[in-house]
Length: 202
Image 1 (cartoon, rainbow, N blue to C red):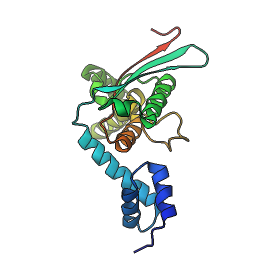
Image 2 (image 1 turned 90 degrees about the horizontal axis):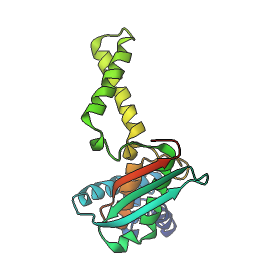
Image 3 (image 1 turned 135 degrees about the vertical axis):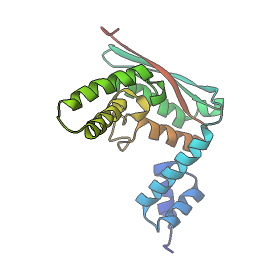
Image 4 (image 1 turned 60 degrees about the vertical axis):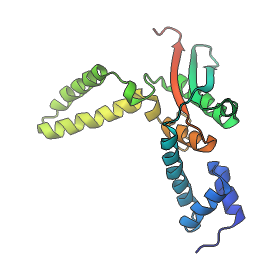
């Protein structure tokens, strides 16, 4: 078994926010490879976050963001389970990062389940029409349209979008960042709703 140094355990903890023993176990499992250990912790964190998803999130914050130009603003509600976590810097930083992202990326829905069926069907219809112009067989056209529909959902659904500050967040999606915040705080973290305001837009 690879020798796990305290320095590597600390480095992994600094990167992931996971507990010391969890970091040590992940490094042991990864044979001392920090990148593999990060992936192990991420998978475990998301699994734990999924379990937490069943718990009620009745606390939280309403976060605002106004762009420097004063022409775009966002109000965002992010919920957690306790007032203690609502005041946690990690949780508040997540809420701020999401509010900034909403201002820049202009998503229309929080989650895929919020997309009305008629909007989805209308988009798929347009995409099927476009695919028909390719002259390819029906089965391939449908796969093309479904692939493009997935791409469209990435564009309009907040949780599916990679954070606009890709460098800071390693290209992670808002859902991945939400799951990480949930793992770090030990509570169910839910982006409840948002409203984006832009001058000249309805």
